[in-house]
Length: 328
Image (tube, rainbow, N blue to C red):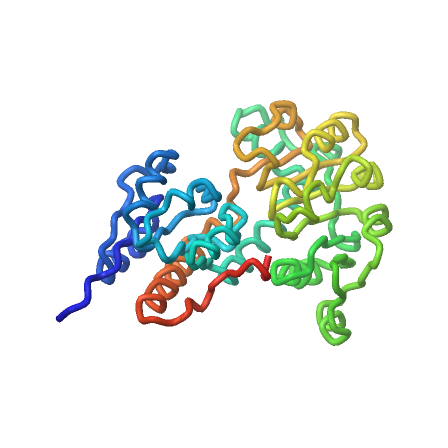
């Protein structure tokens, strides 16, 4: 007798090819609107699904997991981060959690370099003038930015993405420095051409550009707080494509407005879509709508990982990208 297919509920629209493959393999409920599920819809989903496929914007907290039906056995997150999921509570309830790591490294590193260039070369200001039709012509002193070759780049968090940024920065002729809880192997430092700083404070105070690549954990919350932001040079630039809550956004806004930091390139925000309106008004800030991983190739690879995790689970094995509390 044929085994019943797993019931899979997907909380957001995914690339068409991913949705098609999910439908071929499982008894899947797809989202017709490209909007997040509200709380009631999420509750209903965990009460009927064998497998829930949420995204990083869905809050799968202890209260929601507590309302799950006994049939829910896997939360296959469509995203590398799992800070949207209470992994410990899920584990206590016998629910596995998986994610989609290692597919967005190159895309996020590309976007980091794009933000560095956009801020230092004042690209959005030039774009705005051209779109308005206000350009009077070339002038020797117009839109003067800064050359990034020779500048000191500080990388906060030297995981896969941090290392990918280091490789790109090296090609641009930058001096690359980093701080992390653990130091890289000497041969890796030599390959990347990077210098390790044991003290984050000392590194921050000496960098021309600081880029952040750390996960969201209790220890990284406001890691770049007001005190540490004040250590930055007045002509320095800060870039964040990792997690918004790593920076004290209000303190950053105040310092940018006061000219105590030269500029910022942000793809993530402390309060999600509720961005400080004063931050939006600043000409020395480039704001993007969480586009760091937004490539078709990346989204397809994320979908493939979700499918592999679900299929492996269905076959009675541990999902290859299972997340456990000790990993966080």
